[in-house]
Image (cartoon, rainbow, N blue to C red; front, side):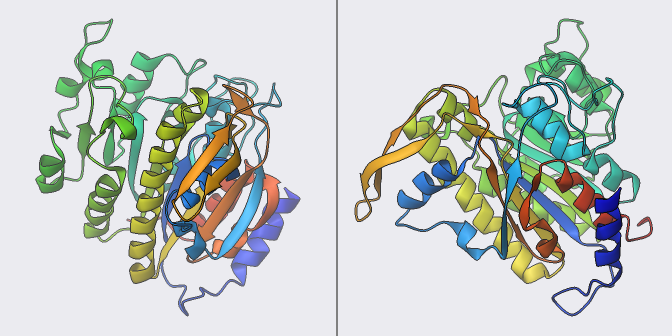
Length: 355
């Protein structure tokens, strides 16, 4: 409560760094799943010693533990960031008493924001699911898809088509979602003129970037941002670089680095938009670190790194958080990952509902 009071006082006197504070900001939340500092560094050294994160204005660190474990999973950490509560590993959108909690996306939606989620995993994976679903187990994929079908999210892009039209209960959610248009390619996603579009990029899990995954995350992000912007309302967009985590789990450096490079290009795309728009807050972080990644050798001139791993699972190390745009100074410092929700909620509730 004390921290929320401090946030209220700060926001009450806040002047937008661009000289205006007259309308609610767009919010782009970017999560590199499993993206610890060494993963970021490996992408940087593999990219001629450059990362788009050099353009950020503020940097901080997040504590990531879950309610029942020092080492979190994506479900618990996703819920912490999306809804501001600690919960149990494998639990999505429920607090410690297993009661439903509202996510920041749902708050934005209910206040008139446009909303969107894009991911390089299935769209029903734990992290994206934590922004719209409430289930005891992250593995209830059919139920998560069913909840997504009723979520009124404007645009969603990710794999996992089978959870919508090849389900154990025989339902075809794509047919049931008659207020949505469904794209079957990036070009059709771009060209469909509607405020509700689903684009299920793969039948099951998308392949890795090192295996040729298309379309690229940066292209999906660019098109989604343009769609959101075209409606003239503020928007909330979640972008997840999901498979950084998978490279860490597999101790597969080629997979890890290829995912980091794509995520970095997507950050560049988002920053280019935010710099021009002047009213978009960008927050970039990770749900946890994966693999205990360490860079032990390499060649900077040749953009080569040698990576060692201490685990095939998550670790409890703190993860970095980066921010740019209006209100970005609120995200500096060292704090619990639940405070991301508190800060975003305080920003949004500074404004009247936007209809």
